[in-house]
Length: 255
Image 1 (cartoon, rainbow, N blue to C red):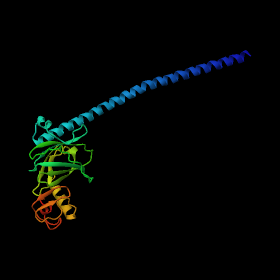
Image 2 (tube, rainbow, N blue to C red; image 1 turned 30 degrees about the vertical axis):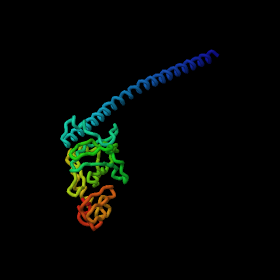
Image 3 (spheres, rainbow, N blue to C red; image 1 turned 135 degrees about the horizontal axis):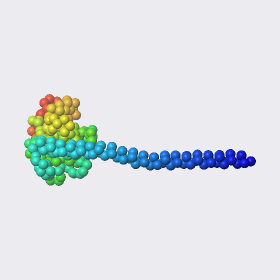
Image 4 (cartoon, rainbow, N blue to C red; image 1 turned 90 degrees about the vertical axis):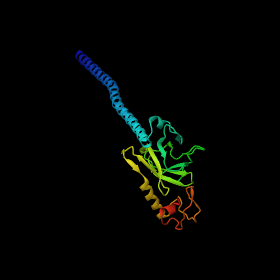
């Protein structure tokens, strides 16, 4: 009997000790987990901090370089760039192009659309505001990243022209010109390549292709020498055409 009691006591003691060891082990694991989680969070924060700071520095550097290019293209001081009148609504989300009107004509309306769309925006010029020839201004538009835009200009002679496939993110400053036939085009320094870009040849080739295809929207009809209206809302006096889009580019444009 006594032997059985001793065995039972020994078993209880062993069980108690085993439970104690298990409890200590579990408590140790919990303590290790508590220590590990803050350590891991601190490590993640330490890694994320420099990355976020680097992104912010890169964004600031790009903005500074964009402003520098805009000043170079338009030959402006920092104060002059900051003082440019705004065309369109300037918001924190908007993209901007410092634009010089070097077309030889005042601009009475500007409409914008993405290059994939068919519907133009309303005129973004303020009421009674004329974008005068020889004057710079800040063109503001909430452009989406990776999207190209078309800019439609109505000039004081009532002709209309479009600058196609404009990348707001890559065009901090630009000069707007017109070719001998009236086609508008941009000259600018690309922010991504730091190289000069002249879109005159691309605009000319595009117009000729659309005229040949019969899809030219700005003066592709016929005229008897007086004036011609275009589907883009513009018209001009002078010039003649009997080909409905055939023949010379200047005849097709009536400019």
